[in-house]
Amino acid sequence: MIQRFVFGNPIDTEAVVKTIAPSEGAPEGWEIDEAGRQIKRNLNASDIVYGLGETVRGLNKRGWQYISNNTDEPHHTEDRRSLYASQNFLLILGDSTHGIFVDTPGRVTFDIGYTKPDDLVITLDDFDVNLYVVEAGDPAEAVREFRQLIGKSYIPPRWAFGFGQSRWSYMNEAEVRDVVKSYREAGMPIDSVYLDIDYMDSYKDFTVSEERFPDLAGFTKEMRGEGVHLVPIIDAGVKMENGYDVCDEGKAKGYFCKDENGEDFVGAVWPGKVHFPDFLKPEVREWFGSLYGRLLDLGIDGFWNDMNEPALFYSQKRLKEVLGSLQGLDADTMDIDSFFAMAERVGSLFNNKEDYKSFYHTYHGQKIRHDKVHNLYGFNMTRAAGEAFARMAPDKRILLFSRASYIGMHRYGGVWTGDNSSWWSHLLLSMQQQPALNMCGFLFAGSDIGGFNCDVTEDLLIRWLEADLFTPLYRNHSAKGTRRQEAYQFGSQETFRNILNLRYALIPYIYHAFMKAQQEDGMYISPLSFGFPHDARARQVEDQFLIGEALMIAPVYTQNATGRYVYLPERMKLLRMRAVDDYDEEVLEPGDTYVPAALNEVLIFLRQGKSLPLSEPAESTSALDWNASRVIRFDD
Ligand code: GLC
Picture (cartoon, rainbow, N blue to C red):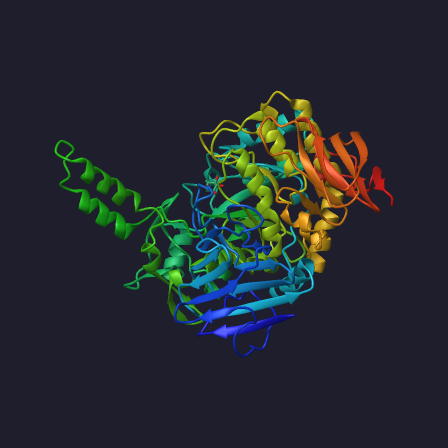
């Protein structure tokens, strides 16, 4: 059962698709303090709190404070409170199960036992909110009810379940060709290569560099002949440049966010100075969305939307102020305090909180300050693209995912979890973020496999590819200046080949389980408690996951480990897989068991009465025979 409670005068975020008549009073078990702008609840010692989509820390969110405030945050360390997305749904699993969705587009602080271990306190900057409260018999039912409220999740094309290789940036046609050729020669399947910002002319959205990609249409066709899709990035900020038609048209039609004086707001991101389209206006979405058509016309059928929190390296106004304040500083006479003050002033230019209060949108005909609707920006950029694809290519599925998001965006695209690092802890984090994203409707999700920042090591990349074997978005991406991270760069070619081929053999299972979750508003990747809600021990497990209805996985995520402990809530069949046709099978009894797993081995557990179909691997999904060539069974 879902109830809605309305406080103040909330903005319609368009996160939900069902209209529910508001109930009177306050939701049961919650205390509302409108003056303090707080919603509170007492937690029992054994309550587990899931949710919040892509945030730091584990599955059970207890013990930290999280802030919904979409942030360009490349340091996903445990002490961070905000990452790129705001997915304000919590699921509390105790003696009973209940969920709460705090539907408000501004900043929200979730203190989940941080200040006081037994208190859950949600604080809103503005107490104008639609609260949706879910009561259910078990966690799966709670998620189903919530997902019915927010509408069906986005479905990507089938090829998007293949392996994708990305890099900031493959600089030209020759580099992309070389990546594809190297994968093919290594016998490793691949379905997509991502084009980062350098494919554009001077980082201008919807342009293509003539020098680097002189014939993108021809090149896209050539790559498709190889079974490879090219996936370009689109950034939120539109470069300010006279004669750049997107900028000129946006200015002429008043499509950009305005500053206090009604002028087009000036920020800076990769292209230098930019204007931000006001995606909250339907006509701006229609305009910006149609621009993707320029790339569709070249044969492109997938996109990733970036920098759409929006990221703000600086605002023109603040840069002027800061530069002004630095005048007169003298390196010879500067004392250490003045040095730190100067460094702080310069550092404060990035994503400055005050800058987000200095520009405006028009939403439902009303002028509204950006920070009040901040968390809706990435959602509406991606919605612009999704709505346009439905208009321009109604019979085709287009790959689309975004960095920033809010619940509601899951109907238009997926997400990737942004700039993680090549750290073992981020391998685990990438897994733990998945179920929380699923709860909020984001089924098509994934992290930068191998890690974006820092130098990867061979063993970390192997373990990450193994751990993410079932993750719908399966993309290796890394930053400029880091060690090259393509699988063929490393010595253990056979291991990489086997893992990637195994992924392809699993795609029919992955796709089927994904579609079932999509159609039935269920979970694709879930914590063990979803399958075993009454098993107190299963509730504690933070590093094993259920994939669809047949499988449990237990990834190895620590350096140099050659195995791990696994908790089995019931008898299961262990598949210790080295390759599609090379694995051990062993039935394991319930309880805690140490399971060896060498670097080239993946641990998959088949549940009782279930079977796992495997296809013959292929070099890309277009060549994949979706019929199973073998079926592994575990009969009761
Ligand atoms: C941002 C994105 C990253 C991309 C880079 C350059 O940091 O998160 O994925 O490679 O910008 O476009």
